[in-house]
Length: 371
Image (spheres, helix red, strand yellow):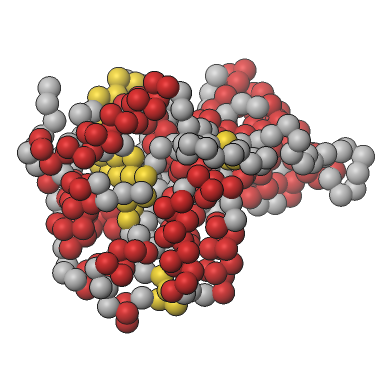
């Protein structure tokens, strides 16, 4: 059964089709993103996977006989005991992202309140779960601990959840919540030409309100509402692994938008032990590019000066090993550093209220305006 509604005529997607063909050829070769003649650097970065752990990385020892780590040791043992019970009973826990519920168990009392003095706060439990996952070299799903989702998805996608529930995402103004159990998603079906990751929820909703998803159909849009949660990253990875369609990012032209894009593409240090399940090194930067600010003559009074923290973040990104493999990215970052200015996606509304959805993104997609 075909998805509806239909978007532009087939020729509109010629650049996207060529891009996808090159991606498929790369996948077939098993190639990464290393430019010809480039030399690998000895670091945690793997161009075909992203940030990942290396055998020589620094490790941390937690001992039961050390006053400094005894509480951490007790916390890990407590969480391990609960994980053991979950696995034995074949039930799952949901690790919530809000401050009021640290770890909620199906059919069990809240772990946090079983020993609130030991746990202290949510961050301590999150850290313990990550440590256990890293120590055992297994994803959290294998520990029977799931994270709640904050992300949204819209567009031409159908799937079945593990319990048999059928979900059909649409291009309407109402998006679908990213599932909690990504591994349990089955029978995924799409005819999408591309997947667009949108940094901000407000921008995502504006694109839906402007019928961008319908007019660019077939496509899929996802937002992690800022820094993406684990399930949003797992979903994007699953869609790439299943369909191998081009994946693009739409982020603010500022260091923190770029950081979010890098998390999707290359991962984060804290989750480097699970990089192969989370990263999509084939992601391309669609916008907002610092060069677009100049090219479109965006009014200077809509630009924002980089703060000291912005400059520190930008310097940090420029020093990362993966920027070596992205000379076009590096050029854009240097342009931002030289101008000492940043811009939000909303700056495009000064050109016209629907410039983003009717002009900027369609032209980028039609003429290959990504890097």
